[in-house]
Length: 287
Image (cartoon, rainbow, N blue to C red):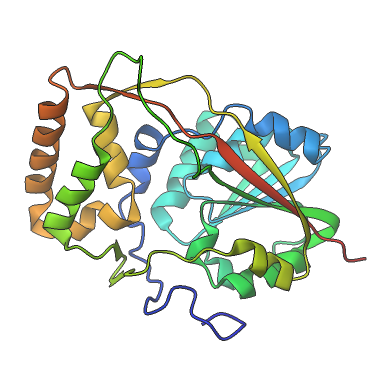
């Protein structure tokens, strides 16, 4: 239940299986954020390499690690143990383990003795949280003048593969196949989300006392060539089609998914245009 008395997602409660088993598929399966994201944030936030960042709902460290060169210290927080382990592995691989810390905790458990920060990021994670509680708590963790940055894919673009060499990923057919196995209502952990995840982030941040927002759209990068393995990884990286949800039918689902993809593209190659990245910057005007 959120601080204003409304459910974060009506009829749904978070449980620890929400992203269980998905972390290993993220790097290969998820489409990248726009390549200019770090440069935009560096300019907008006047980052000089010394500030502290907390990435809330950090997943496998995708955004936090892409910004590592802009901060003196980074703390990633996520409730999924697989995500935390993958983030730590990736940080070591990139040589930034010394200035990163990965904490397994729900956002609702903050501040968790983590101190104060200059920037807090939420990259397509905020909708899973008790949003009023978390927004208010994070504002209290930010220094005066600090920024909360909400990052997501731009939803209003029309993306086609016209002029590209391979077919588009058949997302509608993939979604229908998931529905055949898991039912027509979107799964989320042990529960379902008949109405999807909530929106209206602006009202939540304003209620918490943030000033803003400043909106920035970072253009997407070059079109991508994706293989069937990439697409399968993308499906298994999603909460609503996490591997564990299929139980004993997981292998059957994957076989049917690969058959579907092969029918669309016998070469097992697909073209895809990643979306632009939409950024909203909210300022902590306290103090």
